[in-house]
Length: 60
Image (cartoon, rainbow, N blue to C red):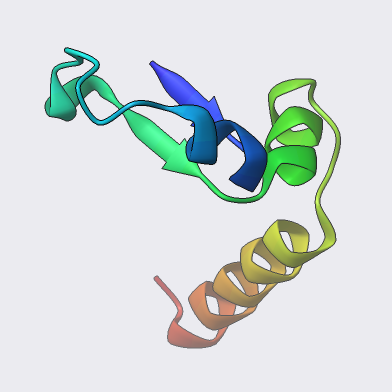
């Protein structure tokens, strides 16, 4: 189960029987929708580039 956005989280009743190991709650509703639709997110792109640069410097 994926729950996205602050408004959606506010309407979820705590009594809903959902296995907590199978739930991801994201407060970034718009960003979550963009990510799930395959859009590139600038922050994730920057992190990916940073990891690549670090990997190149270590020679691994």
